[in-house]
Image (tube, rainbow, N blue to C red):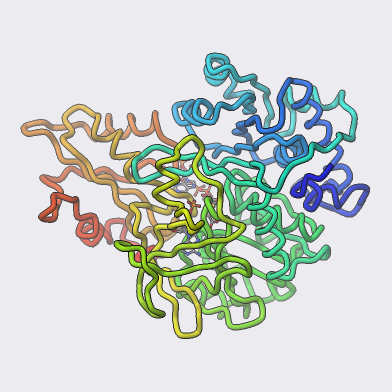
Length: 512
Ligand code: MCA
Ligand code: AMP
């Protein structure tokens, strides 16, 4: 029975004993071994009563077993919902409840907090730890090593990825088999991935970049991955000689450039460096070329759309641009007010349509209707222009969003918490340039009349509710927020006023 995503990314490697995952302890898992462990997990899912279309929420550390869990979900027709390991219990509760997940997989250390929540929401819980141990793998070990793949239609859901929004409520982006597969095959072809490639993989596998771009593209090619638990400069430099390609967020590249061991010799054999998830500064692009002789290939995507554009493999990789629309992806620049297409060169919002564009937000038809037009074009909220040669230049955002080290942070979510604190009249959260993370979070707080809110207590409240990467790096009391005549807070004025607060000598500011 056909299951296009499983068949073409995973099943196609059945029986292959060529390496798939090179682990940091020096061991290797080949394709056949990986598929066997995925099949065993798929049996666990099936035997626990999960049926195709059910959701599985996983907040687990990066491990081969975590990746096999993804493959198992695809094979069993379960919708995979990976979650950032930094999310707090409060954040997780929302995701489990909103998605109606039937199973939650988490680290053993999180079980005490999550078990009562899972039980109260009618979900089963399994554990999976960073070293691969846990109830999930214990159960899987007793299962057969092949699993009858569940038939799926290209429009069936394969994954949910939650993405925050300007209202502060996270939305589950529904991604179909077709969305993921079409993008993986297109990128594999465009970036010339083959079974000889070895990708240096230090990205997390709970977001699009690390899972659906880096992993799926390598799978589509039948290549191998040097699978690191996280970005570690020493490991990156130590293992680079064994790789042919690398994908990363701009912070990876600035951190590598900050290290003198990162040289032309170290990278001479490399075939391709890809950057995305946040703007790569022209300066970083040029420094990288001067140091290594390689031009980083920058591409642009979103959780809702996977990848939309890419610089060319063969042609000029133009610094400060995200290249051309991918084959099969239509892209237009429209007037943010009326929605009509602008003439070439005009600055407007990016809209995209193609097999990569998601099906909508889970249980949020109104949200879906405001962002996904009836004709299939998705309104990205990114502002751009197309130059005379067709390269897309992202010049800003029509959405209140901060990108810190490649992670998206919606200010509204933080403002809602700050506003609730005693003595706080209102707040504004902005992104300011940061030399390592590109942008970082600054919270500006206006006290109630005659109140003196305690910033330490407020910071603690934010820590309790929000993932670590969303915590304001600094909170500042101010008298009032600048507003325009319509009463709207002028965040640009605030961003200009505080842009040097972390005094970055060279910044990766997203103010493009
Ligand atoms: C870690 N911290 C962060 C971040 N990461 N704070 C703000 N922003 C971050 N991105 C916290 C840590 O918890 C720690 O807190 C402190 O900052 C310093 O940690 P450090 O050791 O320097 O950080 P790290 O562990 O080295 O992580 C930095 C990182 C990582 C390697 C840049 O954030 C990362 O892997 N980012 C990639 C994100 C990604 O994959 N994005 C793709 C999304 P404390 O000191 O309190 O412990 S997909 C997407 O955007 C679209 C679809 C696309 O186009 O790809
Ligand atoms: P996310 O919602 O996490 O998927 O993040 C998607 C957002 O990241 C996009 O809407 C852009 O604002 C930003 N983004 C991704 N890649 C790039 C890039 N190469 N340059 C600039 N912004 C990017």
